[in-house]
Image 1 (cartoon, one colour):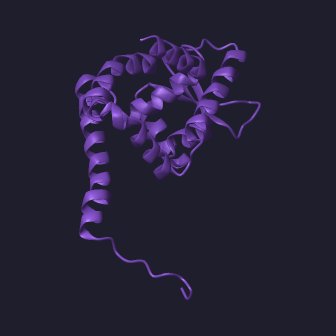
Image 2 (cartoon, one colour):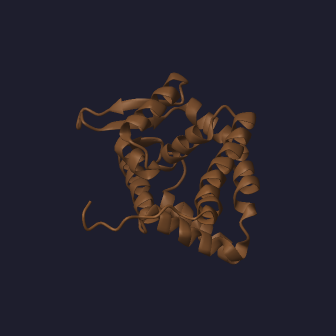
Length: 195
């Protein structure tokens, strides 16, 4: 450790008012949204997030891409897929063309569970998170989250992964769910601009 600057423990105010609040706010928001999810659907918030991503990918996405989008390890993704598969919401698919790639595929029961959970999620999202952030602070909040994530291109990369999955599913003769994610986002922005 020679030549390394010795770090100093943060002040009580910095610890409690910055670090402590960040940890507690994240935990509190996630728990409150998850509670609303469990009360109004058969999914947890974590399960809803996975089904949301698979759904946005056209109903089928590679495990590795799920891991990249969620920032979870592939083993953690695999465990969550096991749980959702046991409940009939997702199935694993290994293709003959690439035995190394494993896909998560949304089942009709999974799509129904996702659809059922959408309103409880939105209720929690708006009431426990989004509506609590003043509009004038929203851009600063997003900027700080981007700094903390340390991946300025994360939203773009995640959208590219979802678009790629959607395109691959559309050429594979699969019945797709919804529209290409980037097209949905563009339509949403266009609608928001008119409002």
